[in-house]
Amino acid sequence: MHDLKEYLLNKEYLTPQELVYLSLGCPELKDKKATYVETDESCVMCGQPIMGKGLKKTKTWPFSANFTNIDLWAKPHSEHVCIPCAYAQIGKAPNGQALKGRTFVATTDEFKILTDNESISETILNPPEPPFVINVGLYKKAFQKHLILRSKVNYSTQNGIIVQYGEETVILTPDLLEIYKQIISLRKAGLGWGEIKYDTPNNNKKKAEILGEKETHIFNERIKPYLDTLALEFLLITAPKGDKK
Ligand SMILES: [Zn+2]
Image (tube, rainbow, N blue to C red; front, side, top):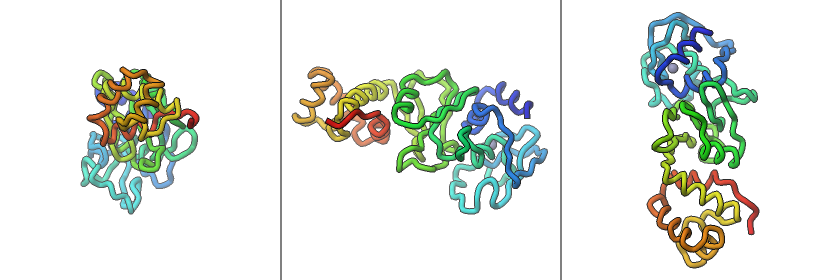
């Protein structure tokens, strides 16, 4: 098991499954259906060469018989799965809950569960040193999805932050991250999503009380291109709210 850790730490680019597995300290996969084998084949899921020890894939393991996301498989004909991919599929988070569908941030040496809007927004505005993965499965639309299989590893934050939001990958550009800070101020002051989004005299009056008149105008212009985007929905849904006025 130590060899795998060594190999992953020296790898130039990690798959999200590999990064998450590293973040958890490369735990042993304890499952009675897990059959370890030596193979030269690539992993069905990530398509990476299996470095020595891998796991035998069956019709029902580690992907259940009703697993429908075979479009996500890089090597659909492979009969093997690598340990990090198998762990992403059936492993447990440190709190004992299934890893699949959890909301977390993972770096090469830390796995942190995010429990609420405060911790999600805090992580997005102050991300860890790359590489890292942020998965958000807390909300109705994103709940219990196969997040890790879809996520992207952030290797730089220069052009923004990539977040896996349920089945969708959201890119938060530097512009959107600035908008996020203002949305958070407005939400904390008790404004609703509609009041934040729409440019009406009544809404603008409420926004101006928090941001000032000039900033409110700038804010309205700034969010216009994003009004119907998933990225803006994500920012609104994850901004911590204050008490409703
Ligand atoms: Zn794999």
